[in-house]
Length: 553
Image (cartoon, rainbow, N blue to C red):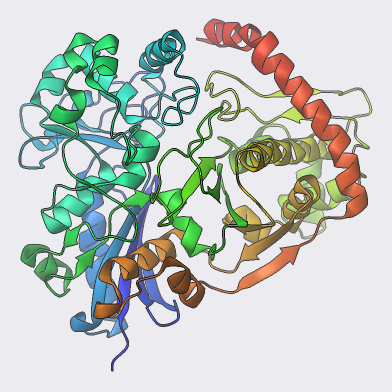
């Protein structure tokens, strides 16, 4: 019997990646990346040159199709794999990336009458223009005592579907009315490939408040937000919800010919890009937590009960691992924070000395910072340079540094920023464990996890847990490929069981970091101070940060 293969498609913020993966062992035969021609429109609308408002982030959906056309045929042509041996496709996508479409699944921005309107384009996950609408929703949650409801997570972010749809309704009602549906970009792509109108419960659960027992919130809730939203879910969010492990449809003849694949192969439901990293990084047991460390971070852990509050989302079952709830949160700023410090705050003398020693500046600064003992610098930081997800769910909060004096060194500040991101991570882990997760090991992936041992040792010491780093640098794409094997099923050469698929297809671990007991004890004291400082800045005097932002604006 010939080997079977699957394709995993990973759609990020600036590009889309495709991988061709062998089902028997997860070997990635080849991969290709295609950069979106229009990238992210956060300053001007490319079609007209119109200046976009602050905190906007739009994309051109045709760029997503160009990824298909430029990546998949190339994977096939250069691999030598027969099209008959590719059994399924899986897709992950940034979320919530919202797209208004007409009755034929055509994005409104592709229609002549709407191409000059910014509200007709895809609103990227990091589009934060709908914060006023999120504030209205949060006020309603408070008024109705719904902060404890697992579907809402205690407080609603402007990144979600409903705030973005409300923004369109209020500012461009003609676009709202013209939209036959609002669709997650990942769901839109699976529709393109299959002609199926089903949606992924991954995105609906984490970004649109859906769960299998109750569905979406009732019409009365939406009516209270705005009478025009009373029938929002039935009118704008139709379609059956599919869990991970199912198939959302099969590849149409048109797209099979276009992509050099066989007609009728399985297509998996789309999944949030960071969530695809769960199987892709080798997480197969309920006592493991996934942690992706890049420009931002994501943490996922399994429980047998729903929980959503303080920015933690976990109210939907089967959205990541069949049969389990998965708790999700993360930090809005990790690698971006370290990069900001290097680019804007590091003295030129440090860069000059690094060059003299033949080292890159990160290596040099890591060495300087690692020579300092835990707490020796006396500096404590808050990692909220791009807002706070957990526990305050407030994108308007900002970072802070305390404890500096005339003896403070650049490496002290740098180390404090790394420690702050580790403390923010521990705060999330503590919430997970308080609500049903049993985390014995952390599986880490992403550029920082692979490239920066200094950072990873600090994380292990702060968390007091072993951290294993996966050798796979394409965890999300591999995860999408693993979901594709589940959509195909064993009868077609794939797998029926999630654990079996992950164990056979995941890559080996690159290394494991073990906590140093002495450092963990010292960090426990610093962590208490971090939480106390966060309480002061997030609860007691958050108006200082909000007023600063108003003055800045």
